[in-house]
Length: 303
Image (tube, rainbow, N blue to C red; front, side):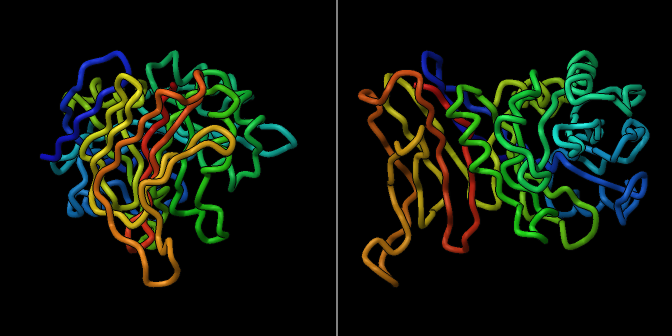
């Protein structure tokens, strides 16, 4: 079982179990190619620990499925009317199987219904939808956004870092998921969320999602993330690029590909940055890229 050590400012270091999760999944119950049992088989065989079913406007009876050793989460993708005539894509995770608000009239109604039902709401692929950061921030109560969405790569809009940073710069503490948004085989196993939970129980998984105790990745893995007494430290699998992304033009570089031209550079597996002189209230997040170009993103922390 994977383990990670996480320490936030003014808290003790905590060693947590890391659960590999796909949190955006479609089946033949909406517009997916595969049945729920087929999707479960794919992800179980690939070594996933958690799978959330998020069909459009309908829930799944996950309690009746053979989980094949995984923890299955009940979810839904909601599509109320949004700004400028664009429908919202709101990813809801951890709702009851009998969740009734399947056709909300507004984005806020959707988010409120999800939270009242005990679930966690995220704005799905905002760049693909065409939303601005300001529009995303009108959704009070969302936990965060998808920073990477596999199925939107077909039109080159799979990454959502710019919108994420704009919301963080505006003072929101949004967290970020990486997901497959699987509809068919080409979407499988390209982006996932590593949930750092106290156990594999649904309650602990949802608590981790609410608290930001996870990271998003296409491959690189964090082993340790610590921000304590103004010092940020991280340990991770070897990567060609490791940076801290911050407010406006602020940031720090531990490694970058080809610093002295093609063929130069080195892989690193740790970083230590002194942030005691950083502007109070600013944010930072750690971003990795390995030699294959696959990325990973920590959730943000505040100075």
